[in-house]
Length: 253
Image (cartoon, rainbow, N blue to C red; front, side):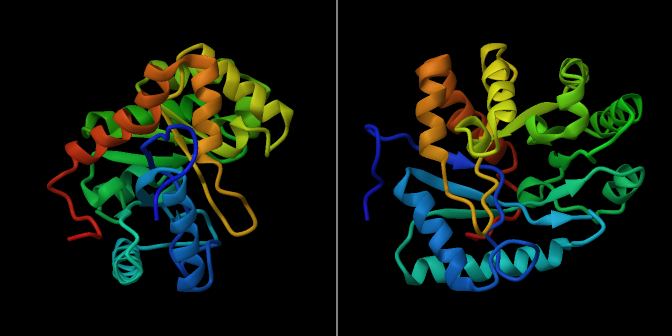
């Protein structure tokens, strides 16, 4: 199988719900393989599997995540799909986040402890969030904010974005948001963020019922920000996480 699309782009997806039976992602392993097949057909060579954690509904543990993504990796090898699967999680930010990190109860990207994908609650006090980001920074952790363009508090006050970025947080927008699948408001915010060089990553945030739109998002980023920025967002920045976390456990090992 060869990836298709524009010449095509090589990409790394840092936000996905592809592990079976662990959150609101696929129920069956065959569905997981189908998601990864879609990703590979668009040029994706590596995917961080990031199930929901600590959100009050799903509590994916590091042990469960490692087990599930190892299972998926084995199945991909059987099907000759050469996409690397790396463990991670989408962690809902709460007042306990720093304490849970200190207790090694949170799955960071590639299980290295250096990059954490945080989902902000729908309503939050900005100063409280900034305080948690500072605490994580003091511990050598880079905070990546998942889909800020869809967060009600940020939508209401876009100045919050600049405050988060000033504190060192990196922004990950969703491919489907950029391509219009979550409505015009989310799309416009993504476009503005790209114009302002405020996007560090674009992830699929793939779930059942959603289309995999990474290649479409890459091509739109090309038009808005140019090839250098597109390649930085879709490949260089995610690859730097992988390199920085190279000694951590990944599911291909």
